Amino acid sequence: MEKLSVVIISYNEEKNIKRCLLSVKDIADEIIVVDSFSTDKTEEICKKFNVKFVKKEFLGYSKQKNFANSLTENKYILSIDADEELSIELQKSILEIKTHFKYDAYYLKRCTNYCGTWLKHGAWYPDKRIRLWNKEIGFWEGDIHENIILNKNSSTFNLKNDILHYSYNSIESHIAQLNKFTTISAEEMAKNGKKASYVKVFLSPFFNFLKGFFVKVSFLDGYYGVVVTIINSFATFLKYVKLRKLNTEINNEQKV
Image (cartoon, rainbow, N blue to C red; front, side):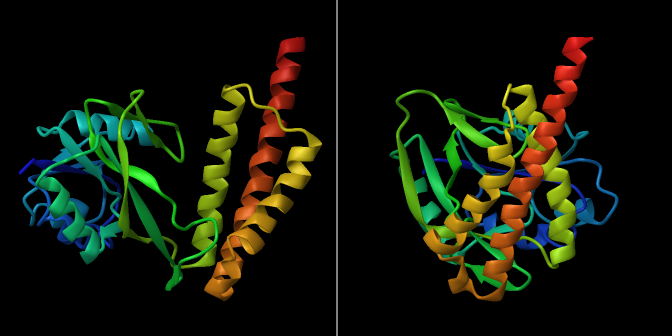
């Protein structure tokens, strides 16, 4: 059976980390937790499990995860966030493929719990991402919404069962985080030379809503499904407004 390293980055995750660790302890041959100097009980909880706990100042999501990956001893890595857990069905699937990894990387679905409601539709589901892969052929990239970049011709496979993601307990916390993430997204886009026209600013949020509500049928998740779709559309608006402001500032600097 191939050995598997589980990698987690954390900061003040005392409410989530135990649940996460319990879900991976039976499928992991090694658990690495890289913590950004938590001030709560995260470290205390982790040390009750068989984990390698490393403290490291936060470098950004991709850099922090790549650093954590560099600490692993095994060829295959499962990356999971502290506010996530593997469903029982997914644990069984991973145990099965550990007997013989046929592919270089595996896409996992993520099902999000928002204010107590599991979202099975809309833009947030199935949210397929590579989370299990051969570390020799892939690495994290991106300042936000980071993704695994694989070598060309790498083989992939979609696992059926879900990672369970416990996200926001309140709409207020979602909106507060939204402001932070849209700023990071706008800065990354500006750095990559992206532009925000009036069309982008005003029409992109509208089409984002149409896609989430009518194509992804977010209304089937009820009240919170619609709430998330509206907030997602507003996030698109904020991102492009902030990008347009950065574009203007860059243009003014170039004229000086």
